[in-house]
Length: 229
Image (cartoon, rainbow, N blue to C red; front, top):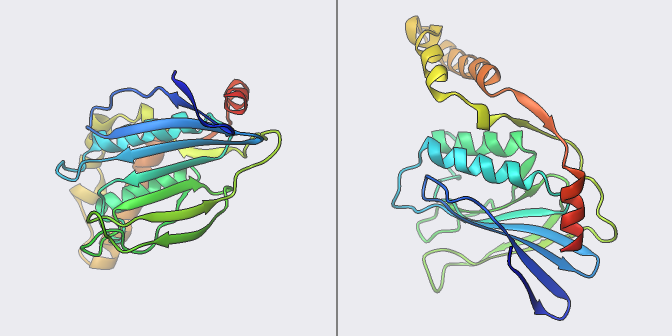
């Protein structure tokens, strides 16, 4: 791992990440300044590429690795998903992943010249973020986003347990086989309201079967590493 001191009070160390299959680019860095620590991940998903299951698998890997650090965590970047469209299938999956990992997205206003929310600032639910400012696009078609992040001072404490789904063990082929045999596809309801309810309950049941929730606690050695880099 590379370690650099940018200014007299700030140390940074890159956290190695794998080369992701989806083409997603990610850079993870731990920062240590005096008695404050931070794990920051910068992420970019090319807008020219389709949103695939591989992207969400790679994103889940980033979230799972980040969950092992006891210091405050922030993820920021351009995911090129229209998070402002609530019924978009990719937005629904994105929001579900955030919820299952105990994370929250703080940007709620358009970040692109076309009036879309494509950029994100994500932290754990117990990490206060204030004064989120999304400035109009100037040098590019994306906005400049500024936030205030309250970092934990003093000795790092173990964060609360995180409830998340086991996406790493998710068997996509078995999931699809079960979905094909479900009532949703073999005998769907006729009216719209019942069909929506059947869709939600079927997918919820299959997700609980193939990607059940688990409670994750950060590893003690990772908390020590984050405090000492």
